[in-house]
Amino acid sequence: MNTQRITAPQIQRRKGKTPIVALTSYHAHTAAIVDRHVDLVLVGDSLGIVMYGMENTLSVPLDLMIMHAKAVVRGTTRVLVVVDLPFGSYEESPECAFRSAVQVMKQTRCGAVKLEGGGVRMAETIKFLVERGVPVMAHIGLTPQNILTMGGYRTQGRDRDSWAGLHADAEVVSAAGAFALVLEGMVEPLAREITDRVAIPTIGIGASAACDGQILVLEDLLGLNPHPPKFVKVYGDLGDAIEDAVASYADEVRARTFPARQHLYD
Ligand code: KIV
Image 1: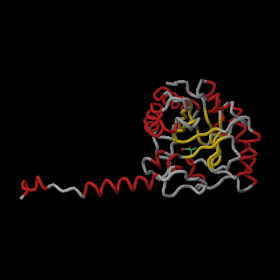
Image 2: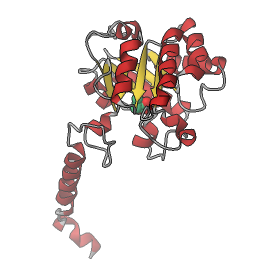
Image 3: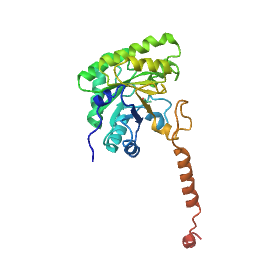
Image 4: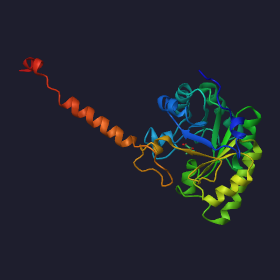
């Protein structure tokens, strides 16, 4: 069995070379399949919405991330597993972020953590973590943990005046030592410019094919989300496949008769 996992520095060295293929996963069995095809698996806090039906990601606790990350690490042997630090577990201070990151890394044996809103305001925290041995993936653009202050899930960079701020975010997280940068919900020309200028690989979601790699939520591409985001290309039809399988099972069980036991109830 190959137990040599892809590392954060290996992902970083892919900048401008071969595209980085990434997916989310929250679950051991699906992670084992994904492991054979991608480079990086993110245990994203989107699990709050996808697995638990939460309205947004704000209520996801650190313990829940750890439980799912353990399952994904157990289910995989070769990918780099990155775990999202959930809302409230890292923003207060670099020290608080370090304690949460270490808890995640010790309990799950993942290879890196991701911080949302990882722009200028998180640069000091990223540097603090990286200097202490925690590989960090940053995340800028549309950051769902800031949904209440952003006022909605809107594509970033529609207004050219906002570009300078997003360029600055990308530059500082790279200088702070992040090994990769997720660009979420961003107009293509801005994603392309950031990708051209920043030294670390960009991994886009709803940010066009101009990035160094792409990440999608696994359930979205499998056809399990009845309302996938507009930018998602759906590659599978699992929603219908599950519906058909469950309906066949239910029909088969309901068609059973129990003539031999009938006398017991007469
Ligand atoms: O939580 C998540 O799944 C994410 C991806 C959308 C990048 O952060």
